[in-house]
Amino acid sequence: MGLLEIIGLLLAGYLLGSIPSGLLIVRLTTGKDVRTIESGRTGGTNVMRAAGFWAGLITAMMDVLKAAVSVWLARWIMPDNNWIHLAAPLAAILGHNYSFFLIDRNEMGKIRFRGGAGGASCVGGSFGLWAPSFLIIIPVGALILYFLGYASIATMSVALISTVIFAYRAWAGLGPWEYAIYGLLAFLLLAWSLRPNIKRLINGTERLVGLRAKHQRSQVGDAKGITKPENSAKEEN
Image (cartoon, rainbow, N blue to C red; front, side):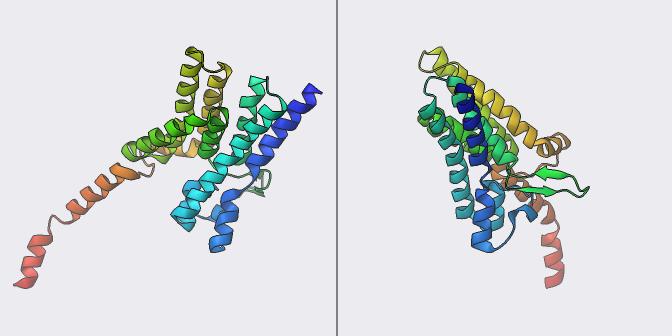
């Protein structure tokens, strides 16, 4: 019976994660298919590009909830099994990134599972394991996004922040040490899904956002405006 429970919880976590929140929200609000826009991912960042801030925020909250529910379900059915508590949200991240409901074929005709990058679902897993972690991960992740300027790095950072939180709690005797493994395994899942972004980071072509994006636009504007005074003077004369 224990094995059947474990399989059932992992399957439930995967199916919860597979619910394409972003696809549904963009379809309902704009009629568009988010998979055809920008990165083609269904997470909150790309939904924000496709349908605006509030659509992206609602998507992110629903993606957080999917993984959190998988943890709560695991704790309810197997309260003493710490490993299944962390495995369930990992299954939800896997489902979010490679959704059962978003199967199609690529340009070569091969079957693929589409989805998001898993950042919000990773936060949801941490929230399910220890709710106050949300109050740490979100502001720290937001600061990383704003000052470093790369959404992909901010996404991967939430898993590492989770690792630090749960490792400290285990060291202080406040929580099980198994939970620290959750962040490390989630990081691997997030990094795998963000392989194209990591390549662009290495090549220096990844899109900037936040403070560095503003600084970059300001520099471009200044460079373009160097000759404007002379030109405008000639035109006036």
